[in-house]
Image (cartoon, rainbow, N blue to C red; front, side):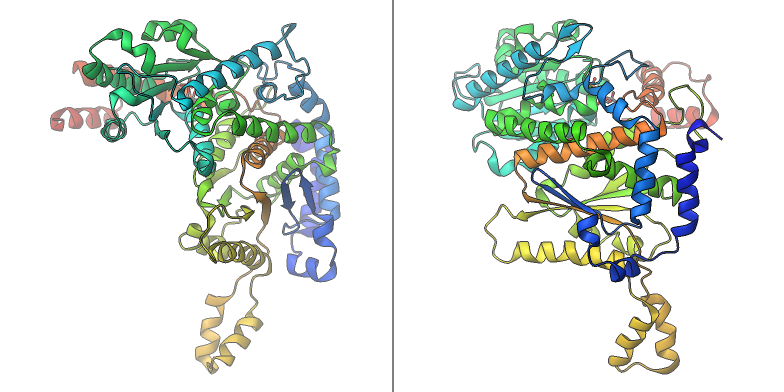
Length: 547
Ligand code: F6P
């Protein structure tokens, strides 16, 4: 057993699981009409109802004791204080500094980083303002109408998700496009819709070495120069967002057109940095500030609230309860909001790239599960696709149902239908439907005897399936900022419990290295005998059949 699974706190939870896993939420609700009050919490504009979980007050007490035993408060303080908690890369983890709206000093290697955070934020906003106002002109003297953001992973998902979420607030002239895939189809289709004279390309890459991004950026530059026919025009149409000034210069972008960020910002946590430039271009400064304000509010709560009343801590602990004690393997993100349709993909990277780890901070193999598989889709579409498995399949997958009270459209009747589905689904997952209830329902429909009895097993819902409901007043920039920060911190909480480094991502490297070698072999037609027979035959087949 590992240090974690041997702790008295873990052992106490194991025993509690054995004692309590047969409890049904239906009974817990029947016995306690105050359950919602006990297991719900509001932070800023977000209400979290976690009462429809397989928990009692003992469960929560024991989970909080586990968090204490794992030094949760100290780890939270270490992150906010700029300690180099990403130790495999010798880096601080300070996305919280990017939204530190009170501007209190934050030190990295003895330097207060707030002045440079604020300076870049000011430059981004000034630049975005000049583009949005029409002052910034393209090489023919026309204002910019289209922005093509080129990036991948954390340099794409955040800006795209936030833009999609807050689209109703976007500038009507600014048409946003996001290109991430090195499959040339994506950039080819995007370039069909834009014109070189009125398009701004924002090349987003923390390292500025990512093959997919640089390939798309080079294609964009060639397409642009084919029309502009003048390298000097590039300065009006290409800007870069990166931590790597030299690589930006090597690519041919003037460093005065570069918006920097720093190695203490992880890629998947970088939406708050200059990686958010497309957001400012689309939505303007005020909405971006509100995004930061909302995240800062959640940061303050996370840093200061007691563990048992701390929203990210509670969400993280609930995830641990299912992952490690119930043997759950996945977690569903189900926004009931069309504008949040990219949110599951965003959280998927945030969680799985952070906590998809097999060794602890000592480099020892863990003897427990770590990150769940995160997946999801807008809830209402999920209902007509995969909820069957969630209701009657053999897996237990906790589900986060995310919705807002006010819809941001003027379509009468739609929003009440949408929200009634959120509440009904949460109730159905909790209550289920017993054999007796099915029998009564079918007899009322006139079914009897063997025919009725044969139908019952197919129509029974076990229920007792956990959901969290996150309800906000409106999906605006402030609430979205708080929501994203909530998940960031939840993931950190889980990484802390598991004793893993949530801030590196070595697991993505091997594939990149091999792809580089194989790419050279595809292009040069060189010897592939070093490979296993499957890889060799696939390469040979490709070469034989490629146009
Ligand atoms: O390959 C994974 C990854 O390194 C992510 O962590 C990151 O968000 C993405 O690639 C993009 O990296 P970059 O911003 O350096 O282009």
